[in-house]
Amino acid sequence: MRDQTTSTASTSRRQFLKASTTAALGSVFAANLSFPEKSFAANSDTLKVGLIGCGGRGTGAANQALNADKNVVLTAMADVFENQLQGSLKTLKGEVGARVKVDPDHCFIGLDAYQKVIDSGVDVVILATPPGFRPQHLQAAVAAGKHIFCEKPVATDSPGIRSALASVEEAKKKKLALVAGFCWRYDYPRRGLFQRIHEGAIGDLRAIYGTYYTGPVKPMPPANARKPGITEIEWQLRNWYNFGWLCGDSLVEQAVHSVDKIAWAMKDVPPLKAVAVGGRQVPAHGGNIYDHFEVNYEYADGVRGFLGCRQQSNCYSENKDYLMGAKGLANIGGRRQAVEIIGEKDWHYEGPQPDMYQVEHDELFASIRAGKPINDGVRMCTSTLMAIMGRMAAYTGQEITWEMAMNSKEQLVPEKLDWQMALNVPPLAMPGITKFV
Image (cartoon, rainbow, N blue to C red; front, side, top):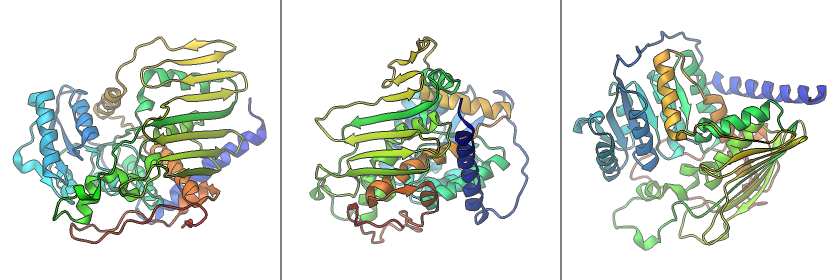
């Protein structure tokens, strides 16, 4: 059992998150409006899906959406690049055939293509562009009354988080389903494990250590690979993983999954503060992201959350989680590997293991049909901001509190984009020199 001091501290963190969220919402949505719920009878009404972002993850998510319900069709697609959209469309037609009903005039290309999908008459949108665009797309989808599958992370900067939190609350008012792409939350073995941890199977948590050691995801091509006529915006969009405003850095884009499991273990109560180290050890051809981080999160009740992540070739790889409690240990392996508890009563998962990516969509569409929409929004924003907080700590070399991260004025994403605009790449952050904003 936690003592009264611990309970009070944890409660104060929840109160702060609620207060911070409310403050962020005030400037975005002034009116408390009520909206009628649009119901969909079980499999008798066709649900139309629109895909925004036609890369690998978006294409996979569309496939899973079309397999989640017997009466779902894909009717619109959007991307900034024609070749990417057409490649996705071809793949989906080969995988799910007749459920792909995307006419040529519903294939939208360009920086404003997302709005055209939203306005095309769809019921559900899949948001799978580079995450820098996510807050804008989420806000537009909620404003139009669409149910949403929103890939992780939900933003790359704090203004984006505040916008996303406002959209989350608006989605609740409109009774819109909002499922986040933090896929491990939909994994049956991990659900079983965290349920037992929260029930006290290993006693009070003392520390969590998550690892995400892997190779480079999308290495930056050399400058001579840039074809004549490609603008700076196009070059950065085609190589989005290498630019902080688009991906948020490797910690925010990839290792956020490990951050999310730390948050899950802590019942989504935010940490008090974080310190971190990080940098770029392997030279790159361009871009401005780090290739390694180590973050130390401190909680009000004395629990520590540690995260180590790396994207470097020819190095040790590991993606695991270690949870240490007063009465035992819990270990999580990589995908499809065991979860286990070692303590007063040992346990390992022996139940069904459906594909977690499919479960995300199965539960999303079931909630729409039932008129009981899922909304993952607050925890989606909490986990994303935790990752951003860690990046801030590593970039600046400073201790960053939750309040600082939530209220930061640093805006990475330009307010308006144009294919011909100049967009200078900020230099690689230097701890002790780069300032917190």
